[in-house]
Figure 1 (spheres, rainbow, N blue to C red):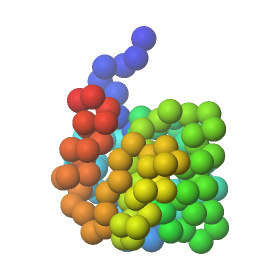
Figure 2: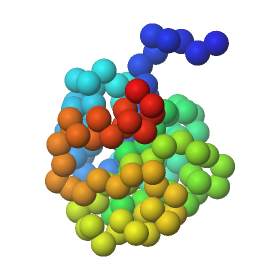
Figure 3: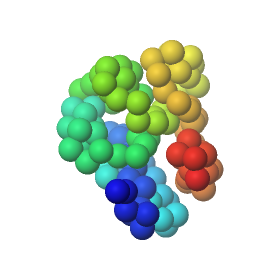
Length: 122
């Protein structure tokens, strides 16, 4: 039986530590449990091991871009995913690959938290 008191776990993936920290602090202030990854490979590992309720995923990363991560996640997972990017042109591809939402950078964490809650049905 699920624990009703458990905070919803969000995996935040971005290769810029300052963005990861900004999002982490903002979501933790809004009562989420946040796990972070700075690379696509690490994101895939954590998605498997921590079973997040939702994922916030950057597109442009050096080792494996967000599109590759998204495609690999969608092979066997329906976890809600919000793709974030400064390049609005990436939105159509992200949605085609299975993203649930797209948020353009810069954004505020209050709006991001509201979108996450809406996706999760809160």
